[in-house]
Amino acid sequence: MLKTIFSKIDGLVISFFRKTSGPFAKLAIFVVFFWFGVLKVIGDSPANPLVKNLTESTLPFLTFSQFIICFGIFEMAIGITFLIPKLERVAIFLLAVHMITTFLPLVMLPFVTWQSFAVPTLEGQYIIKNLAIIGLAMGIAAHLHKHKG
Image (cartoon, rainbow, N blue to C red; front, side):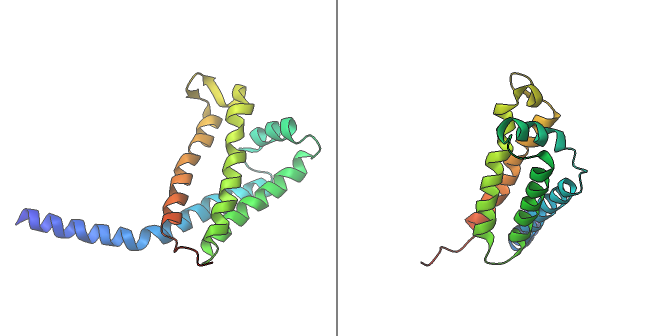
């Protein structure tokens, strides 16, 4: 009897998550990228010093103020494209480009991102948590219909 009740509740919970996980995943990515992008555009992002260090060492031909506004708009675009039906593939491509650039400081700015071997700084943890975003995007991609073309 108790096993049957648990099984029924378990089935309802799983069914609910199957129906809502895709839209919630898209909304979650939108919130994170749009919000963090806005913070960069208005100059209030706590990531700005890290981005400035990376920009100066990789793109010396751009000023930080030019780059950070473009980068913030790019992040906002990633968030928005995750919400628009039929643009998920574009969103995932943009996210992949973003993730490549986001992980660069782990290698190019180790003095900022690592305290010691395998011990990230707060900035390093901020970057490494992007693995969760990648997993979320992979879940979204896994539910796309095969492209006909």
